[in-house]
Amino acid sequence: MDIQREPATALRKRRNVLLRQLPPLNSILRGSLIERFKQCGKPGCKCADGIGHGPKYYLSVSYPGQRPQMDYVPQDNYEQTAEFIANYHRTREILEKICEVNRELLRRREAL
Image (cartoon, rainbow, N blue to C red):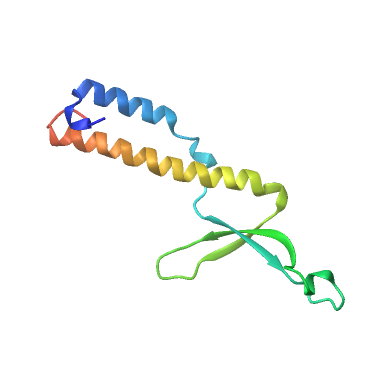
């Protein structure tokens, strides 16, 4: 739907709906999950001939001008970590939509 054609009241309602869709802010995490398989180095271990032990998961977070920081994610925390990362991406998408609504209201010189 084209927000430029919506009345200001509809835009404000849309914004309120979007706000209710935001995940809890204490349940977001920025980064990516990296899956790794590692070889232990023990002679005769089956990992020497295969892909290695794993999968092991790491949270990778990048910062401008720095190398990505990697943190080990225990298997027990994998599901929750993946959910928090998905919540972060969903939060960003929703915030972009809210910003579009606010920008349109501002463009029209309407009350935000």
